[in-house]
Image (cartoon, rainbow, N blue to C red; front, side, top):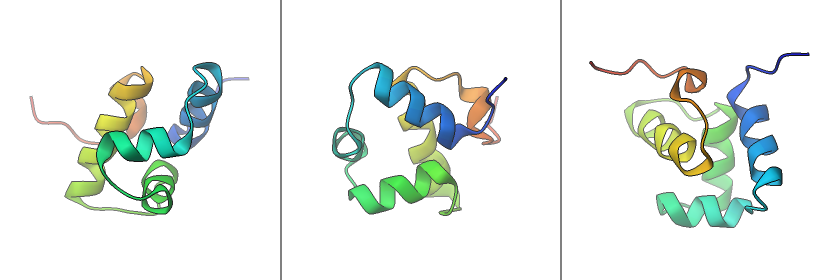
Length: 72
């Protein structure tokens, strides 16, 4: 089975690297609730996309799975 949903990939990587949601929230400087909403895709907008990219870099996830249109 191939997983391409960013929220599921983030959960897997957090478990593999023993990183808690509060650690990710601290990395982007937001609350754990907001961070979970960003990861799951409930939060939308420019700032949420920026945080999603930061989370991907922090967890070692390829940016193509974030579903964020990046400027070249």
